[in-house]
Amino acid sequence: MKTNLAGDSLSMKRMRIGHVYEIGIGEERVVNYAGQPVIIKRIEGNEWFAYGKLCPHMGADLSGAQHMDGLIRCPGHGLLFDSKSGECLSKECKPLSIFSVTIDRSEVFLSLKPSEPDIITTFVLARYGTDGRIGLFEIKDLPTPGYGKTIAVRTPRGVERAEVLPNKTFCDAPKATGVASLSIQKYLITASDAHLNHSQISQYIETEIRKFDSDLIVLEVETLLCGNLVIHLLGEGKRELGALATRATAEFGREVTFQIAET
Image (cartoon, rainbow, N blue to C red; front, side):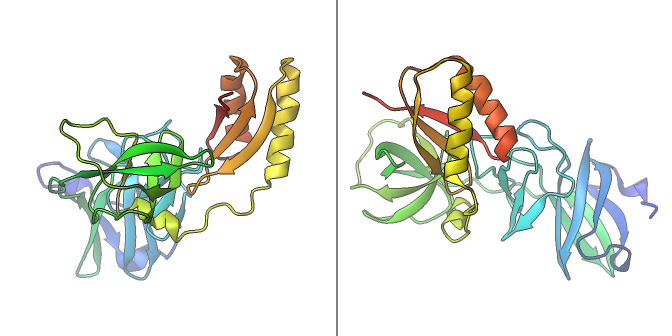
């Protein structure tokens, strides 16, 4: 399909892609727009996604990325991005570039997405993780949850289930552990990687640990809501764990981090 490049200009902010009937359901097209390669994909009848071709995390190619419930999963490390805002829901990461697709007289056009208005934020204390740690979370674009409510929060480890603790007033701007947004709450209703075999993962980690002569013991394998894996270990930390985390991430297709238990 030939693309009309006459509209590929930031001054016009709109680029003609072609006719609706030229792009089948599930089909992807890649065009250069706004200085970067952009994927345009038709999901269903009138549902279209348009986003940067390269993942902002580590530059993985997003061609063929999975789509579910308005989320885009990177095939590289399994990170999930919101298809409307581009927000990375799996970890702290730059947002994915999101573009607008409009249909005008059966023709498909690509354009820049309008900027979002500023959002007023609040903060809550919440308990998260299998070890019951407590953190302060920034609440964006959703009503402040009450005491005892279960919410999904994004921490440095990934997206986790958390329980809101009694409210506290902060005089100064607090330093947050993570964030909870409306998009992140999708994890509470979307099953994530229930097929992962924790015994197999534990055995893999134990085998790898023995290779660098360590007395570390695997206590538990924790799967976060986003599918990221947290391996809880007992013993003294080793520098080799960083390289092992990288290998394990490639092995299981999910971000892997290690947590050394406090004794």
